[in-house]
Image 1 (tube, one colour):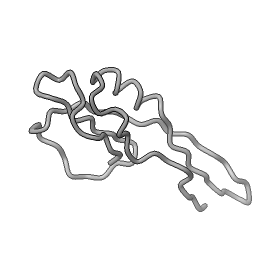
Image 2 (image 1 turned 180 degrees about the horizontal axis):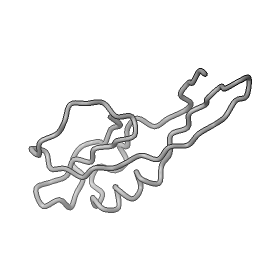
Image 3 (image 1 turned 180 degrees about the vertical axis):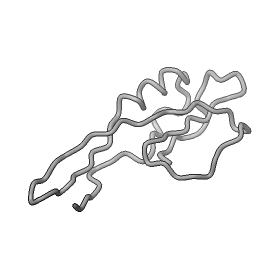
Length: 87
């Protein structure tokens, strides 16, 4: 079995300045496509992103997850202040 990543979004710069909940809904609706070859058949699989809304100084793990998008917001948790990225 082999797999390769297709065209995939890695950042969402258009969400800076947007409302946090709307940004999270937008990210959750986006998908990542993976193509998997199994016994000479090619399958495409779509996985959704899991948004996390965090303030700039909130504790965060350092692990890498290709389905996670951290949305960094202002102290009131209402406005996106940094470009959300996958990881």
